[in-house]
Length: 568
Image (cartoon, rainbow, N blue to C red; front, side, top):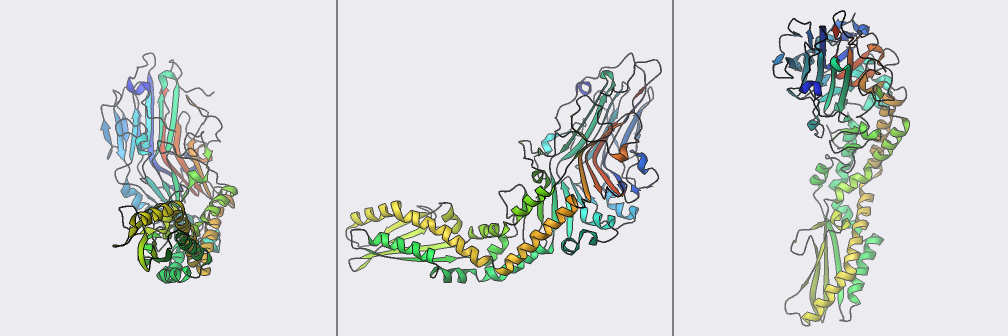
């Protein structure tokens, strides 16, 4: 996890008076890599891609060859910051127009390959005469380039990568390679990225390279006609649900049994009373249907599902990988990882998610019962006439109706009211109030569970359950194809070349990306996220890097102290 702190050399740079620097370099680019034969950077000349056509997305590079002034590339569009660490630094906003033109440049139909909030992403680079360098991008401070954790707790999507179109092009213009179940039911698929940043900085005076990153959260967002199919199956069911449930109340043995117990409890009072309990439900079908478009898993960080045309199914990859969210908004499965850690979704994780998604039927019922109003009126009679009523309402002074959800949560009140002119007022009121407290309230609470079961049986018809099963099978196939077999999508956090070089190297990471193996000596790169499609076939087919920063080479003139960071 990134630490929001300015390194000591950046706060008070100490000139290395015994060293004469001949080159200091830093670079950054929010999106780089290669895309189906098109490389995306003019500042990161990764050897594996040098023969590719260039789609210039304009990363930022600053090179200082003392005593000459820093040279910034590109000069146009960059902004000089004179107050950074007593030496000039430069920043440049992500070129959104170039992102939009990428489809034309690459000659492929990607739609919008990547979307990012306008004005939110800066690319920052600094290379000073005394050997210090800083390259960072993404959620970084606009004046110092330091990773800014204040963005990590937000829900803002910093980048949305169109995986559906990317996969379609990588697979030769068709999704059939993913199987018919996926190809027929995948309208859209994106990888949404929360606050993301990569930063490399080097102080040659202390022979030290630092690399850090931020990857607050990752979510797969799926759009499928199967979400609309479940909704469509529910439309006629919910349209007739009030009539259906009210008809079932009189025939359901559990509900009628509870009502009989309520009546018998009143009848048993030593006052010669009789009782008649009348129960019905009331609902607005349009309100129920509208509720299905909201998140049906509000208590789950793993899933976010809405039903209907244009609605989506979101899968939190950090949670899927077993991570938890921290107070700063970052997920433990994505942050604080060793260099080149693969984000490996295995078959067990897919099974767990599919099991959770399979509970969507009960979540649909849960959303519905929270909106179904319950009308319960208990008429108490005796002495030849009506004496009192016991009415279900939201609170002692709140006459709003109670929902089935309110009954389940114990959020209801039974109001005892005596009719005018009733004799034995004190004894009757005392007896009924005591009975409500000791017996009737408990029985009414049990009605909540009975009514929920009744509603569930009415809502989850054979057609609805079949539509749910199709959705679950589709998601299972999609995740299996992406991550397990054949595993065409590869995600790596904290990508680094020469990963053993650094001040505080985290142990246990993987080898450097194969396409970075030939990076020039003395350059040290970091990217928050590496995304590769069909990596087993050809690493150059699609390899994208998000939030990439680099420092070096940093060189000193002959006869001076060595400046290359030592490898442990």
